[in-house]
Length: 213
Image (cartoon, rainbow, N blue to C red; front, side):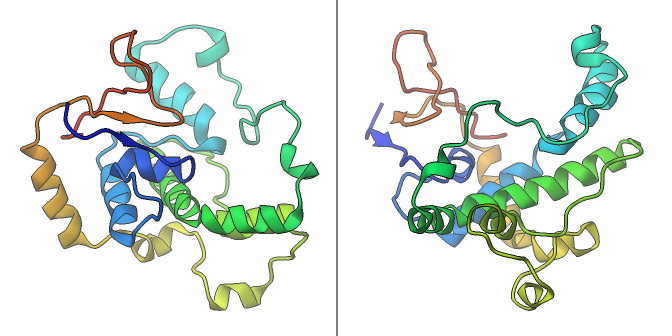
C-alpha cells in the first residue's frame, strides 16, 4: 500500500480532514480541513447536536424512537461524565498543550459556524446563541484562570455568522482542492494513529478514506 504513515496524537480533527501526518500543522492543511468541511451536507457541533438529530436527521431519514428522535431538546453540550484529568495537571503543561492545539480550535470554531448556518438554512428555529468567544480563548479561561475581556478582541475575531467570511479558507484554494478530489479514487491509506478505524476487521489502525468527499 505504499509508504506507511502515523498520525501524531494531537490536532486530530485537522489531521483526519487534511491527511496531515507531519508533527507541525501547516496553514494550508488547516485550509484543506476547512475545504472538506464545506463539502459536508450537515456539520454537527456540541450544543447543536440535538437540533441536528431531532429536527433534521430524524425527519429526513424517517427515524423513530424517543431516545434519539423525541421532541425534547437537551440544553448544553454533550460532555463526558468522566473526571477531568486536566484539573490535576500542571497549569504550565496545560497552557502549552492548549497552544499546540490551536489548529484544532480554529477548525472547531469554523465547524460551529457551518453547523449553525446549515441548520438555519434548513429552517431549524430557536437555535441557541452562538458564543462569540473563540474556543481557544474560552479554553484558556477555563483552565488558566484567565478572564476574557474586550481587549482580546482587538487581536482575534469574534465567532459570528455575519463574520464568517473572516474564517473561510481562500476560495481559489478550495476550488482547486475540490477539483483534485473529484478525480481521486477511493482508497484505504496506510496510516495508524489515535482514532483510526479498522477497515477490514483484522488490520488495526486503518480507516476508510474517501478522497472525493
